[in-house]
Image (cartoon, rainbow, N blue to C red; front, side, top):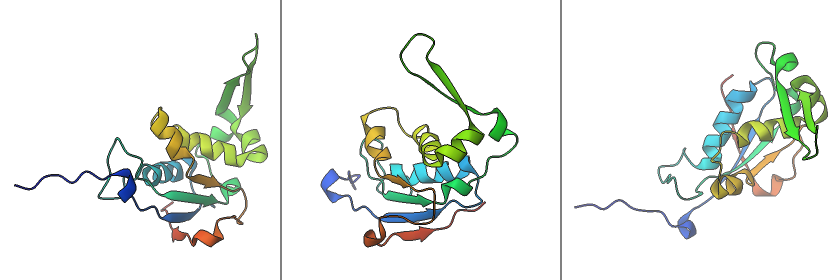
Amino acid sequence: MNATHIVKASEIQRAWYLIDAEGLTLGRVASEVAKILKGKNKPTYSTNIDCGDYVIVVNVDKIKLTGDKLNQKLYRHHTGFPGGLKEVKAKDMLQRKPERMFELAVKGMLPKNSLGREMIKKLKVYAGSEHDQAAQKPEKITIKA
């Protein structure tokens, strides 16, 4: 009788992946990145262990939104003070902080617990085509539009 092999945290081997988001749709790229960060692309995936890989995403300033989301989608946060609800349109967010916009999209697709907070740390997002992780020799992944 074969027993199921449970992967230990010390046995996990992490790879580095590079994704060019130029001309791609925000949600489609974010969902693929979330899968890689979770480790769902590996046969050793387990829900209770962070077995995902590192992901570098470049050119997020050239990402697309479908429909009229640029004008209609709002990013909201509260300062904690009375009347402190702040709203930013997706168009403004894409111009000012495209990295933050992409991070929020991916973060919403990860678990809402300590495991998800560990997973999001493995995401590196850059607005331009240059990145600081060249020493890790990331493997380039192409995502269908």
